[in-house]
Amino acid sequence: MNTQPKPRILFSREEIDTAVKRLAAEIRKDYLGKHPILIGILKGSFMFMADLIRLLDLPLEVEFVGLSSYGGGTESSGKVKVVQGLRSPVKGRHVLVIEDIVDTGLTTSFLLKYLGKKKPASLKLCALTDKPSRRQTPVTIDYLGFTVPDKFLVGYGLDWDEKFRNLPDICVLEK
Image (tube, rainbow, N blue to C red; front, top):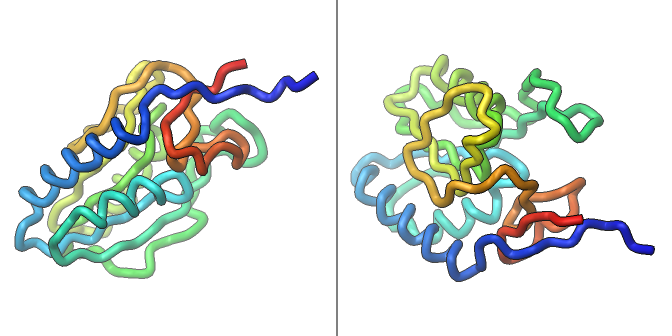
């Protein structure tokens, strides 16, 4: 008897592609002449970020940070720590954080405060998905792909215990 949850498509690859193109157009317009540094939050943002930066025909730099709030469990501990820090300085730079999903807001809020202390010229957030029904900490999303229901999402970089990250669509995990 297989009890592993099954993914059901919420947003198809084509819908994701349309959203990424829209976000890229907004970002290109706002960052024209600014040479931003885009900071992806690992691991979930890597697919979204890769597709997004291929559409940004402007000078930019790419960085990644690794954050953890889970420890060994499946529920957030609420305590966020940096497990892979920045290698490039952001002081005086235009910084755009790239996130796969804003859920409780704890991790994203932590990172934005962490980066804000480093005195960037500007600091904005681009999130592929937003799950406002679970928000515990307010977060301003400057560029948003989709608002999603309070369901567990996988695919297009999002995972469940490191599974389903490679799916081309954003899916809801169902029992």
